[in-house]
Length: 174
Image (cartoon, rainbow, N blue to C red; front, side, top):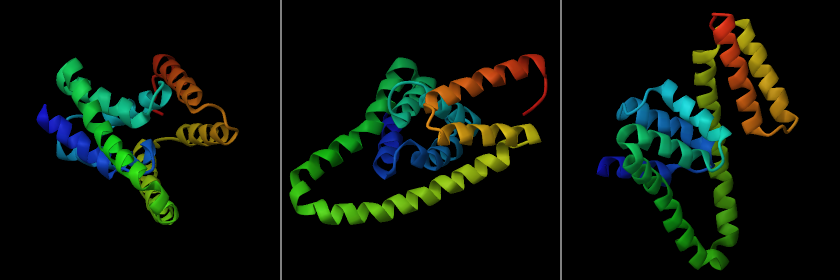
C-alpha cells in the first residue's frame, strides 16, 4: 500500500495541466512500469473518470487503487494523488503576492509542454484504436460535438451507449 501512495504521489507532483496531461504519465507508471493495470484498463478508467463528477485524475487514481486494494487501496491512491497539490497550493498561497507575475509567465511554458504531451498521447491512442473508417467517423463526430461545447461527460456517455449497441448487434470491431 505504501508503494501505491508513493506512485500516485509522484504522479500528482509531476503532473501539470489537468487530467489529460497526466494520461501519458499514468500509462508509463501504472501500465508499463508497475503493471497494475493495462493501458486499455487505464483508458477505460480515464473515460469513466471523465463521465463522472469530480477531477479525472482523482477518479482514475481511485479506480486504480480500488483494483489494487479495494476500498483501502482507493483511499490510499487518492490521498497519494491529492497530497502534492495540497502541499504546493499551501506554499504558493504564502508567496502569491511576490510570485504572481513570475508564476504567470512560468506556467505558460508548462502549458505548452503539456499540450505537446497531450498531442503525443492522442497520436498513440489514435494509432492504437483506429481500426476502421467508422472509427474515424466517430472521432470526427466526437470532435464536432466537443467543439459545439456539449458537456464532455454527455459525449462520453453517448458514445459508450453507441459502442454497447454496436458490440451487441453488429459484432464488429470499431
